[in-house]
Image 1 (cartoon, rainbow over the protein chains, first blue to last red):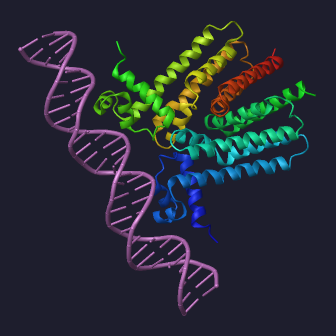
Image 2: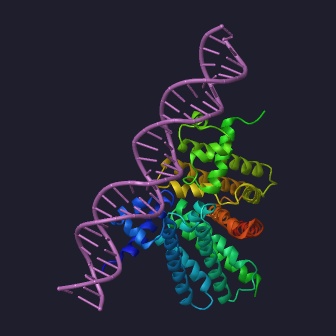
Image 3: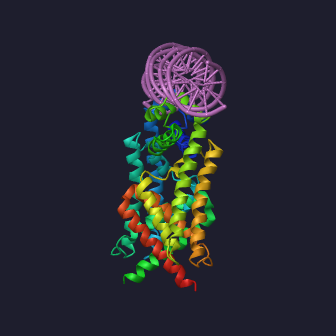
Length: 188
Length: 188
DNA sequence: TCCTGTATAGACCGATCTATATAAATTCGA
DNA sequence: TCGAATTTATATAGATCGGTCTATACAGGA
């Protein structure tokens, strides 16, 4: 059975928003790319803003879920590096065009408080997962460790687009190890 | 003597583009904010794209110049940390809303090859300056060191917007030191 | 004095934008 | 097989977009 029109619209819109930006992607582009008529879109989403919110929310749930699965199945003491690895795999598979949440923050900071808040919330979700993984590895006492790891992962969003996936992810892996090793050396 | 109309348009457009995004900022908004009439803008810039290019180019030249000055006046062996410090000062002074080059890349990747190339070029300018500073500090032999430092500085673009300037820049400073110390320990 | 360059003022163009209205056609479960 | 929900098709509203046009005013230099 084919996916529902609603789901098809969500994935089509996500791809177009991601590649072309939000303001630059018109409703007509989305519906024609999805092979659907305009009223079908407005039957499922009350406005373009509602569509964007649904796209971002669904994507963030998939992202967070993949992180949680990686952490849950990580060997003891390796939750943090497993999370970083899952982050890298996400970049490789779905985010070589730059982080869609960052794009949303940039386009809607002064234009839609709702969208902006959702994108910021997604970033906080990631930071919170890093903090949980650090605690799980027994490194909760290291001040600012999670934020430093967060900085590295955010930096990789840009380097992937600029230097290519292979180089960027290799660099990122080395830095994660470096930061973790330093934290374990300073602490017990 | 007041600044020329052209310069005034450039700074006004830069602020609006930075805060509201490129597509979301119309020509009318720019000219009314600049207290200038429509034809004055088109007298100086042939199109909106030309205006965006001029804005980004001027901004990048100011940015690179501030980095070069910091490196040139740094004590021997501290060019890299001086460059990172100048980068942090730039974020604090001019870029708390997120990196305008990243926004341009996101909005014009599939929409204007010229703008996208200029923004990518700006990022490469930064990476190149990092490589030069690393070499000046006698660390040119460390493979990937410049790229790792670049990743940290790119990450700070995001953390500044999410965690605030004070926290983000303190974290960044610690990470730059960490990466440099590790490189000096492994190297000579 | 004349000429050139720049700014102002405002109307105007076609195109595109988001969103709605309405009626016919289709789908699909009970 | 019937009826409700969904989708299609089309037309339209009203705003805004980037960009052009004409005409006027005024400055400084030749």
